[in-house]
Structures are given as structure tokens and as C-alpha cells.
Length: 266
Image 1 (cartoon, helix red, strand yellow):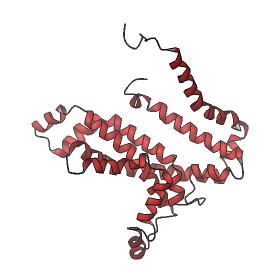
Image 2 (cartoon, one colour):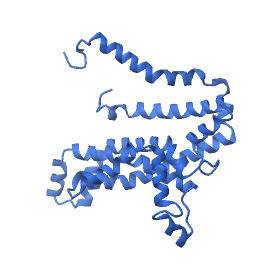
Image 3 (tube, helix red, strand yellow):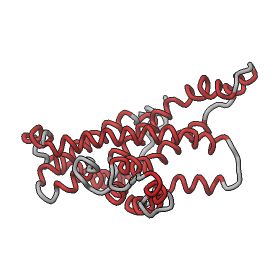
């Protein structure tokens, strides 16, 4: 009998505590679905403000995920394949946004890229570029919080893959670049896709760093999470409707990645 069909007995206390934990996590989401104004949903989601927030969220989150992928994959490769002094410190700095309060991330971005920040002052004085309170600022905030998800996923895949395939390709005369694109990338493709999707989902749901660094201006920086926050002050129904959209997207992402997140188990 396989381990998938044979189930070990579980103490009743464990079952009770698991049920309580499930209820604690599920009840708020169930409450959101119960309170959702399903009959008004098409009308609430078709307002100009909701449509603009949805459009801006898709544009900025996809762009941020693309940036996170382009920059995060090489970074993950270096962390997985190269030993250098301070690698642990570098990895720690890269992964800090995973646990850092998002609003603190927004403040950090302001200190670096604000008009008087470490880099921002030169961008503004020399080129007239102002990143805070702009759509570009939204993309930066989302990429900042999303990239660690891509890096940690891809680095784990690189560390766990069988290096004999790369060794065989090099033995046959393949260049490092050819090995990277013809051997390594296909082998880690599932994890790469999973990391990119997780980064996109994190960027789509970003709130704290965005409102701190980019503000909450309709049509410019007001993404869906910020629109939910603003709608709570004037229309509870609209806030719930927008929340349902984000809940649905998050649920679809998690279901599509369940095999990768659980190590191949459904």
C-alpha cells in the first residue's frame, strides 16, 4: 500500500486544533464572499475609478514582475553558484523585503530615490526625473517587494537541480552561455515560472510601500489595493467588490502553483 493511500492515525487534539486554525483563516474570507454585493458586482466594477485602478494594477504589476525576473534570475544564479565573501549578508539584504513591514520599505525607497535621496537627488537635479508619486514609483515599489519571491524560488531550484546535465554539456564543448540557456534554464523552468507568477501576485497586492513611496492618486498611482482603501471611506460595497477581485486572483494563483508550492504533491 502506497504512502498516499495509507494514513497514519491522528490524535483527536490535533484534528480539533487544525479545525480551529482552518476556521480562523477561512472565516474572514467566507465573510467577504457572503457580504459581497453579487447583484451589483458588474456595476461596481465597471465604474471609471475601478476600471482605471484595475488597468493601472495590471500594467504596473506585470512590469514589476518583468523587472523582478530580469534582475532576479541573474542574482539568484550568482547566489546559488558562486561563493564570495559576505554572500550570507548579501542574501539577507535581498530577502529582507519578505519580512520588512511594507511601509518601512516605502520609507527606505524614499531615502534612496526621493527628490533628496541618495540617488534620487541626482536623478532630479541632473535629469529632472522624479520617481516618488509617479507611476514609475509604483512599479519600483512593487518590484522591490516582489523580487525576493523570485530570487528565493529560483535559487532553490538551482541548488536542487542535478548538475550532471550541465557538466555533460560542458564536456561536449558547450559554452557557458549555451549551457545556461539550453540546459539550465529548461531544467529550472517550472520554478522560474512559479517565481515569476508569485512575484506578479505579490506586486499586484502591494499596498504599504506603494502608498508611502508613490502616494494614492487616481489614474496615476492608485492601484486596486489602494482603491479598496479609498473606497472604504465612501462605499463599503465597492470596497468589498474590489476585494473580491483581488481574492479571486490570489486564489487562482495559489491553485495554479499548488504542485510547485507543495513539492509536487496536490
